[in-house]
Image (tube, rainbow, N blue to C red; front, side, top):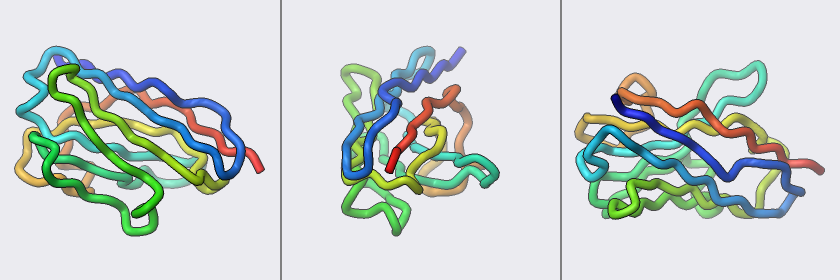
Length: 124
């Protein structure tokens, strides 16, 4: 049984930083593409970032490039999302997801497993 668990969310002021972590179990971590998505109140879930199995290639939502960085540590079965210069519009529940597909894309239907999410709130 594949399980994903996010941590690291919380309340931060505008301009601050947070690093989210997502640990995986029940899967050979190096065989899955990992992604981060987010969902703000009243909005649809949207793609944030994704990373290939080896970590050599990443993909980002255009509007987040330069502020967010995805990385992974296959030895620790963990994927990270470093978020800098946070803005109120970054407030959302952030989900990690795992895909047995072939590309680190932004289509949520490509992802097979999902975590429960962690809340990120950016206050102004």
